[in-house]
Amino acid sequence: MILLGIETSCDETAASVVEVSRGRVRVASHIVNSQIPVHRKYGGVVPEVAAREHVRNIVPVVDEALRRAKVGPNELDRIAVTENPGLLTSLLVGVETAKALGWVWNKPVVPVNHLTAHLASAWLPPKGVVGPLPQLAFPMVALIASGGHTELWSIARGFKAKYLGGTRDDAAGEAFDKVAALLKLGYPGGPAIAESASMGTPSIPFPRPMLGTKNLDMSFAGLKTAVSYFVAKEKPNAADVAASFQQAVVDVLADKALTAIRSTRAKTLLLVGGVAANVALRKRLATETRGRVRFVVPQPRFCTDNATMVAMAAALFPHRIQEPWTRTIKR
Ligand code: KG4
Ligand code: ZN
Image: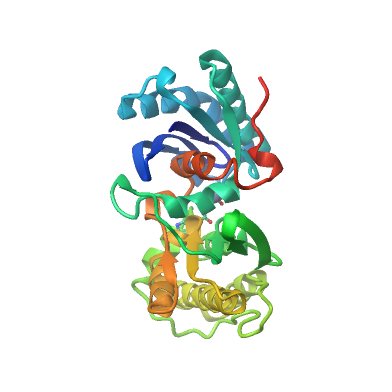
């Protein structure tokens, strides 16, 4: 099966061609046009600007994905597109493009939930562009950590998903972005904090909200406030603040993921979403899970928003997850 994936939920215009057949996955193309330089001067994503940029970029990006993959529209089996959640006007650009292409090329269009797409990234090749479709053991725990969501899910055989817990306020990625802005490290905050943290010492004892409880809920707003008070009062070294903040987030996410594994007797842990690109978090969970459960984390380029995961979701899930977003858009 050959799929074209389209993703425009936030500030990346992305298109990919993915082939899933005979137990193998091949990423034939992976195009991500990031709007980061456009939004940087505002310190964050401006929805109206993002939507206009998507309108400008979407056709060239889809074109490029097909060209690099050396795939013609006739060879496609499905068009997969992020339907929700995200910035409404940005999502619309992807969805309308997918529907128009589906109509012209006479191909089914599969709307994909953005979180389901992040989840599907765990089935992409761990290295390079080709790999066997991994056979992952159920039950699984999935930690989805992005700019808008931080959630723990339990996934049973047949991809039956159950919500275990998540943030009660800010998402982990959002906390990275806000603390980076506080430290004037720029946007997006995750990679900037991670880089600064590598030059600092995690010596400041920031709070670890809700750590050590059986409850699988999390909270990051208080941590962000603690950092802002500390920075205003103590005028500390930015790298030490970055390292200490990152350590606090990693401690909380690792603790909650491990509690979820224990309480569901999971055999596999999936770490997905933009924050899964964080090296400290990847290393910590790799260490903590060694010899206990299989730990799956996608290549960093498949963690942050991209269309390869959207195509993968449409290959893996439409017939298995019975959710409204997996219905085919009627032409
Ligand atoms: O999944 P994603 O690309 O978009 C959303 O669905 O939100 O996640 C973006 C988030 C941003 O908050 C960004 O700062 C964070 O992921 N992020 C990171 C890293 N790379 C991206 N956070 C920590 N460390 C990173 N290396
Ligand atoms: Zn995302």
